[in-house]
Image (cartoon, rainbow, N blue to C red; front, side):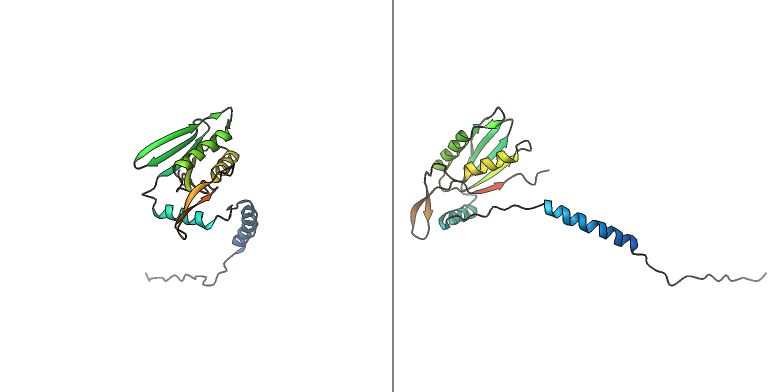
Length: 180
């Protein structure tokens, strides 16, 4: 018996059908454009006095030496002001009563903290997920500057003297945004 050779023909030229890929792209691009209109990163740009900006930078440079202030916000426990100073915790609480905060009391407590720590302009904000967006904005507004134009001392490095500002805590950082 002889050996038989089979000749197998391969199609070496073929066409790549890009129609399904293009169909997906045509549908995906408008969806991405529309969704990007709803997702915005909001940054509130405000002009701070140069002296306050320098004080914030000094606080950032010396963060291990200075006290740290954290506002823990929850509808269960209220607004807890936690001050870590030289390894010791001091805590003060403004309760959340009848579905709201007493904003006069919140502002008063923050002014007391500012009087104790006049060289601190940056605080951490740790809200629970049950706190409304409006309450967070109101807390930031209450912490930002004195409502009654009360002045607080801040060191001016250029003149070598203390000057006064009505800003309390203009630098607010969300401390728990990356928690899972």
